[in-house]
Length: 396
Image 1 (cartoon, rainbow, N blue to C red):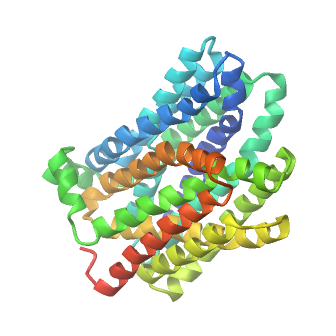
Image 2: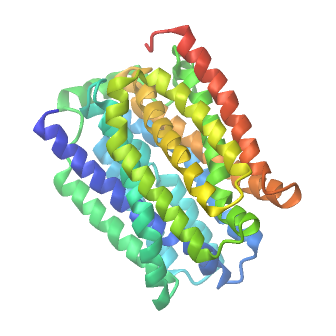
């Protein structure tokens, strides 16, 4: 890998880490912050829904605009919007302003899909999965550091972590402006602006969906997003209800998961993709996730839980990275941003559906149901993955 590419990957790692650090500073504290303005539990849940709805609508648009006008201008736009959303959150004096802040963050928050598109521009097909793995590693590291730092800062007021997140994102914005070069050359940008494929139309999105392999990959992506969000969003409630964990124990377990995610996506992905085909890794990841989630559903104690979380982290790291890598190879270069934005929209859809559905199932049926439901979703994803492997259809 050329030195210039390594430098750009390091910058993107720092960008994603700071982005997730800012996000995870405020995420665990939002219920308490909104509650200080008299928000009910339903309204607190709607804060996440409003944010995810914004991403659902905006991510494909931002991705497609980045195909046409370059990644860097859209990254700058997205970060500037995120700074504004955090400032609004930090100075909020009413619940309405908090809702506006979360909606704005969703509408401009295409940072992760833009970072993935940037990496796809500067890597070749052989090194792409390894490059994309650094995003997962930055995610994990951000979620390890952010909640602890946010908890400390909240001692000085629930708005302080939001203002700190605004400061971190502003630093990120300056770093992108000063140090991050555009991943498209001037000639390529001119060609992309002229290409009809980069125009944002429903026809272009529909055409991308019907390219070879795109439908299968997006179906697997949606099923995985639903299953993993069921696990992630309901884990704390499950741990409290089934194993009687304290908040401190749950935070330690989640830190353990974050460390596993960093190790898998930062170190293991490159080795795995050199030894196994990416299509086969998707099948193995889907099958392993199905088995692990079913095991999670019936876990009786902490020791078994720690053992089961390892394959969940491994399979999740593989699927996060390799699905994105395969999607970027299933479309033309002019369509990469749009298809990754569409993939992020599916994850946002899962964030709208899964938390409420999982909580309802856990409360009304039993603690085993979210895990069993996630396992069934991943078993269906494994069927799609099996057909995808067996078809041997070329990506483009």
